[in-house]
Amino acid sequence: MAVFAPQDKMMFQLTMRRRGISDQAVLRAMEEVRREAFVEPEDQTAAYADTALPIACGQTISQPFVVAYMTEQLQLKHHHRVLEIGTGSGYQAAILSRLAADVVTLERFRFLAERARKRLGELGCGNVEVLVGDGYDVPDSAGQFDRIIVTAAMDQIPEDLIRRLEPDGILVAPVGPQTGSQTLVKLRKTAQGLERTELIGVRFVPALPGIAREM
Ligand code: SAH
Image (cartoon, rainbow, N blue to C red; front, side, top):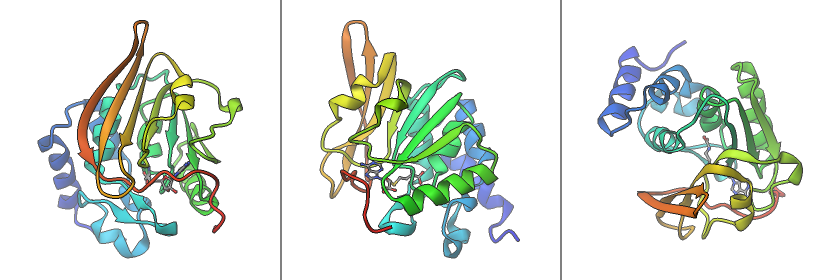
């Protein structure tokens, strides 16, 4: 039973365009992935509002505009291998899965990782691998990536993540204090070195080291 009106979804697309998202493939992915499948049952009616919402373990599902914006900044190609730090609900991973060849996503809460894995499986996102892990300590076995997206706030971008980028790779991450707001930073690995661009102000929950003990 749909608890939101069809016009909510139309407004959602309009909001993305109005706020400046213009990449057609990104807009299509945002249209196709049902955000209501990733929010808590009590937030169903707010699924298509352009706001972050609480999920289990005291975490959040990001604001749709920020998901679309970060995805657009990644300039994804269909052959890309992508690493996400901070699976949360799995929503961002579902968007990435439609635009890239393979997605590896790391979450420090086992509960969130298992729930996202189940959800993504049910939704047919067969190219996403959800791992319980720490984005500050990515296992060597995960390999190298064309694109890296961090969806939790980091004081600075760890050297190890930069090493994981293929030549010409792009990394997007919220960088700044863990309380308050951060700046979205885009790094591109070029033959001449790292190219750093500061994008927009954002607010993310903190990236914390280690696997969570609670759940
Ligand atoms: N991308 C998510 C939203 C992320 S919220 C979505 O689409 O729903 C940030 C997530 O990052 C939280 O679930 C938090 O537990 C996780 N996280 C924080 N620090 C982490 C770390 N060091 N390694 C992996 N995940 C981390």
